[in-house]
Image (cartoon, rainbow, N blue to C red; front, side):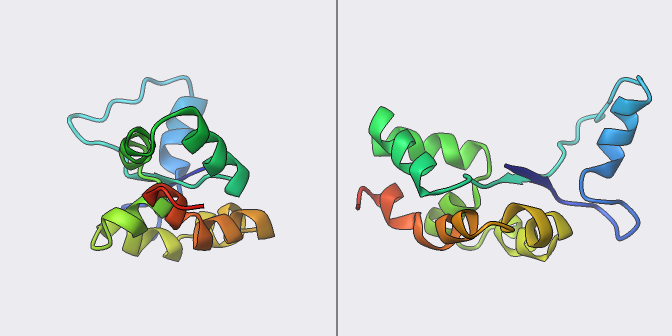
Length: 115
C-alpha cells in the first residue's frame, strides 16, 4: 500500500502526479523526488518477507520503500514518519482495515528478528 505526501494543502495526496499521468503528459520531476510512504497490508506480509529473506535484507528493502513500520523502528526521527499519519490517505485508506492497523502497530519486532 502506498501514499504520497503532499507539498501543499491544495494538492491532494498523490493527486498531482496522477493528474499528469492521466492527461498522457510525461511526469518530469526536474531533480525532485515525489515523497511517498508504504505500509504492508498485514502481519502475514511481514512474516512472508522475513521468511523469504534475511532480516537485515528485509529492513533495507523496507527502508528504501519508506515503509512506516521500518521507519518507526529504525528512523524514529524521520520527517516522513511524522507527516504520513496526518495525511488523508493514511487515515482513511491505508489503516482502514483492522489487519493493516494491527500490522502498523505490531510488526516492528519482526523487523528486529522477533516473532
